[in-house]
Image (cartoon, rainbow, N blue to C red; front, side, top):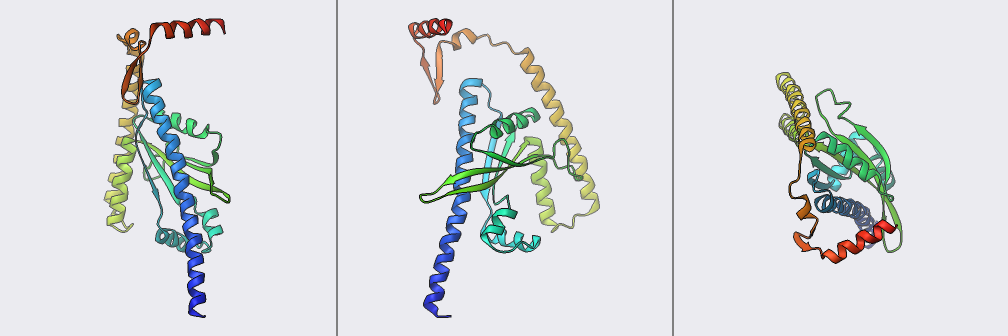
Length: 248
């Protein structure tokens, strides 16, 4: 093949691949924006934020190639898009099990999000004890000349589930997948202990919410928390809005 022609083809392929990977980056940006809005809403309106922390990542081209080879997936953009739905992923870590389903409902309720698949490894744990809620979502990404539908995988789990999964991953990585039987048994036992901790923390959380009495509720009504500031609320404004609300 003529060298200049080969360079032109490589340039075109690289451009297409760049656009392909950017679509997942932009899809992650969209989801992260939605999650950040939910976090701020909870902090300012509901006085409780169920999201401890979140982390997003995009598979590298090398990782995508390796998965194609393992799964016998044709190495084309169309096949990769259709068969590898975890190129872009977000992990959301919560304090309590109930928070997981609460966040899942809110995400699924977004109008521009399509739910493609749900795998509930909390109600149906994997044999090794792994627990997490997995969502495969589709979200539109708008380029200057086209619209792309991008798949995003979201994993939602508690702090205890995340700690166990991280440890399990490190052990399997160290032993290259050939983990000694006694360690597999210990991991399963640890998963059960983590589950017991989650259930106990959920109980304490429920008890705390039932017994909670905010002694400063009245004074809080006089301020509006926004952007880490407290804005005084004029009495006339509150009374006017209350009066209008009564008439509606």
